[in-house]
Length: 434
Image (tube, rainbow, N blue to C red; front, side, top):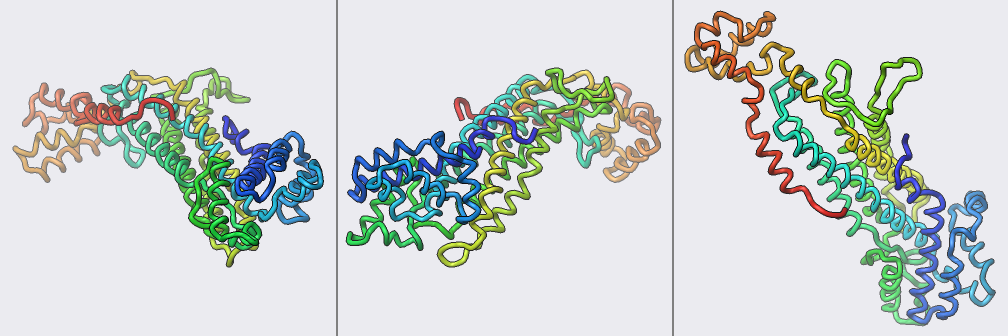
């Protein structure tokens, strides 16, 4: 339930291992461009950097003694290479160069399918908005019926929120992930011994190019703004998903019954009548993990001097879990909206539950010219609190005809700009691939 969808595989241990190996291979190719390693060595290192050739369990076990997984990984990599090539693997780099670059690769690769699920969910919400542009339902504030709205406007709100979350992730995905290369303390000294300092800048550019990541202005070993930006975009997307999932869960309650999930899921182990909104529940459960994970990443931002003692290590698991949780939430929401069934008759019945109380604002406005605004408000409030209906109260009937009251109590006639707002939202909805 909490690890559903394609992002799960994109952040797996195997995916992380391959990303670290991709960073090692890219480093060798970038160094070959500058003549720091031979082209033949770069080709051999690249060929060796395949996750299937490595014992992930052994790397995991040995990482505890080394303080990070790069040390045992490099040892295994060199063991697969001829001695003259082995010396050129990982030359000049520090472990954080490889892990940070791998983190950016993992994030970039994982947010692709995540955005695709968000975009699909937004498209499904757009279809619901168009189909139910003028379907009246009770709008609710503080969990109480307030005024009429339309399900189309509700769905359009879901759509625009998902579009905005996807756009934030797109900006992050294209602007944030950057290669990391600085050597031990960010000076690139091991790469530029006996060479011009400008060669280090060229090497960073070549490394970023080989990885397909952005080129940073400086090594960012202790500037964790990129991680924080990623965490914020992911947590924001999760919050958007959670809001929509919660709406579905509330609307699917037995006493409300305005929507239901299709697909035949949601049965109970003991109650045959149950049809729980499992996709919405799973989306909400996955998304609920995001705030705490993001908070951990924000709390880990202060890194000491040129390399952190613990704060960097603290990022790895919550970053992976945050990608996985948000990806799972997006996957489940897409599933939910794709099977959602709308009960328009129940929406109409719920509008009539209060005997016209939902339109009290409108009745009071119509009475105001004859009795004054405050008196009209108090009169209608007295009718409603007494359990009566504006349609049957003689004090209202003395000032408004039965036909006038009936027209004022029609929820479909008091929807304001709902239809126009739906049209406006749909006109801004992006078309095409994520």
